[in-house]
Image (cartoon, rainbow, N blue to C red; front, side, top):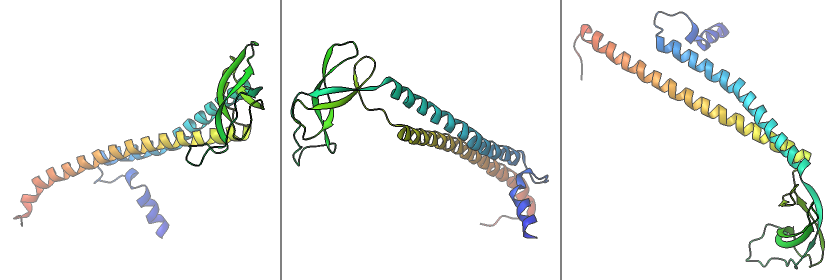
Length: 193
């Protein structure tokens, strides 16, 4: 008994009803469109963003490679008041670029190393120092997170737009009810208050 009534309440916007107005039908279509866009569009956008992120990170792993470098100065442990990024600090290193030229630049290296220590740095095809690309597991996780954020962004914007449209429909309904009450109300007798 309860299921039938609940089913009828759930789809009340789609039932034939003499009191149903055009704005009620419009609201039903808006709600349906919002749900379809959130579910289908969110899935498509999320998968596309995840695929694009994974492709970019795969390309980074293919384009970047590690090379040996020599530390040019000692890397002291930071004092307690100095900002530090954990166990790494910026230091000058020297390495040989793919074209054979010797390059010098600054990169993050482990603190406590002495000048002349061999370290591993990452470079791109032009010989410019770059960060180490994420591993396959990190890339998969990052792609999933980016896909999720893209899906949530789409869902949020669609739901906000749907809420604005429904608010406007509610305002139109209230204005219509006020107009109709102004026509019918005086026929029912005197007004109080």
